[in-house]
Length: 67
Image (cartoon, rainbow, N blue to C red; front, side, top):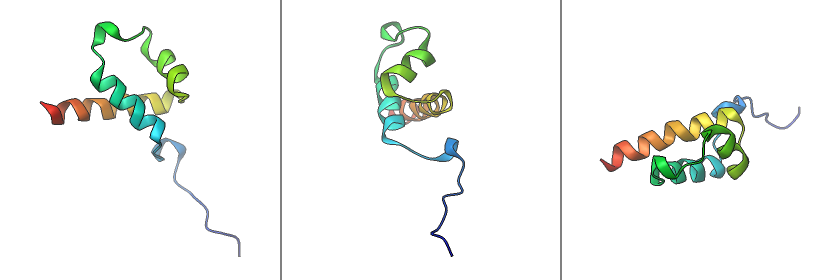
């Protein structure tokens, strides 16, 4: 039989790039962020659009925990 397969969808996999993007977003004031944000994050952190959405979600959690 073949080796175990990773059957989790790509959008549920976690990466260090998402963590870095989330931390950057949580600590960068809105006026200092590039616009449009998602294309900039895709280029800066080499993420997909779905990964950018996950980083944005995580950044909200980081900021909420800090409050």
